[in-house]
Figure 1: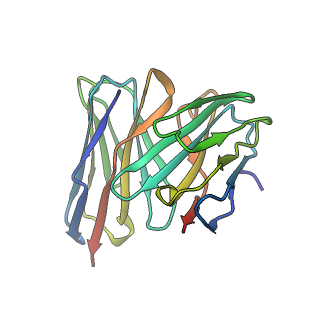
Figure 2: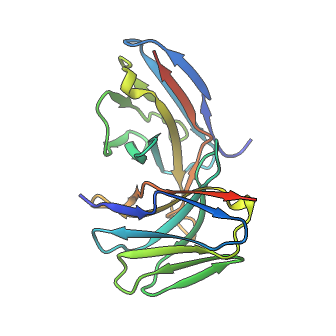
Length: 115
Length: 112
């Protein structure tokens, strides 16, 4: 199906474990983003990517790693999860040109709990 | 860095009452976008404003972009229970036109 999909939708892990959240989009959008959403903080940008093999830090990158070997995938890895990384994570992509060029389309989100 | 501030943080209304949320940026914006997130859902794009003083309407929703392009508002006339959710404004920032900085959102609840 076309669109942007995230997996897993729900994940419970323990402190210190590595976790990877997957994001896949079918539009061949160049730009992709990872946000985290926490009560009282709104949406905060973790990492973003302008194209395959081009990534950059956002507002809250510490403790996260990203890669973008293929245009359609943008996985987010927590190398050693901490309780403060308990959050809802949203992946988003945006079009490259035309009327939709600035608009973000979000995935359904991944709810991560770190015990 | 750029900050986008949104007020109020919460708003509870009776069905049929009007609702307004305000967004202020610390810097001039080339455009501003509004998103809605239903409870348990993901943010969904509503509208983008580009021109100074621009006003756009979507049924009962009216969006305005300030003359100085540093503030914006979303007004809902005669709220309905389907309007429940968090409304976010967002503007490009951080030295890049393709990164969006979001306000913290206004959570609207509607009492039927």
